[in-house]
Image (cartoon, rainbow, N blue to C red; front, side, top):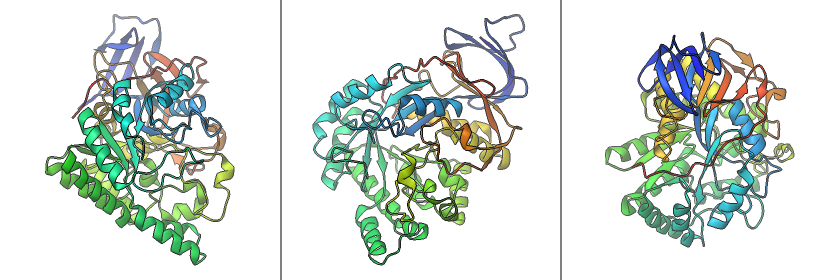
Length: 453
């Protein structure tokens, strides 16, 4: 394959060039006038970026494929320019907290994914003896909740108590892999939620008020303290506040091995969006104020955020149909929109350099989670994973354009200020805006290659 004349986003450089691909890997970069490919792609006028590495998705298999599943979830990701994703241990039943459960998930994924994937393991009470076997089986890291996880059924994923968190960190530290944390203080948020419900306060504003920034900040600081004692590598998922980013930055300056992730919904939506759009915009931590959002954008622009991920957390639409915000499922279906939102709002509108955005969307998640030998960057020898984006083609997202299983999203009706025209995974075109998805689902499982510390 030869991709001709695109504006190519490299690690530290944006330049018009050609890309040559052989056997699914990048073989040449530059002017390839004398080379003819079996497949020729005219990328003139398009921006060619490394495919997004979405480090935080919930595809809910095994057991809850009716909520999403690998086929529909990976379809949405591919349509959004994602070429690699890392699936969380929940809300599958059983959750991926044992090697046996991991095998069930891999069986469900095989032959059913449009793009490549890796798996998170889980840390939860009563499962500490499975940490090392999961490491040996090839998970890229571990996920834990510091507040109630809220999964369906008795066998669902459960939050850690302090003992499990501390001992889990000791074990995970020995593997060299990262512990990804949902950081909210359960004692704070549960008491506030009880009070709200007792007083009959169940609106969007009441839900948001029950999960204040201090609950996030307390959990972040407690986890940082535990990690300092154990030497555990940390990754904080879906951070919603600049205050938490600053606390994590201070830990980095002390020499801690910690990274911070935020999500498009915290950068694109506010607490007013929650009131306007309803439960489709409910998540935890909740959406914050416009002022908080601008501070978070500043952290993104200044390099305080390491990774941007979707936290695609889908559910059947009926679980969103309630006026009681405490009863609605908390999760945003956004797998298809992440790259367009971040490039459109971040670069087209705000002028954040594409090199900085590709670091957060692609190269840093690949590096952090042991996939950078082949993923996350346009360079010779890497997998030929690309998103070809038209920076001048804005459009309004319609429900009919969504590929994920249940067609609700808070982004329906929003203007996307750029559009993914083509997604290429290991040299295969898996999606084009003109013709849709390919028929082949050739995504492969990626094992963690080595500790990136």
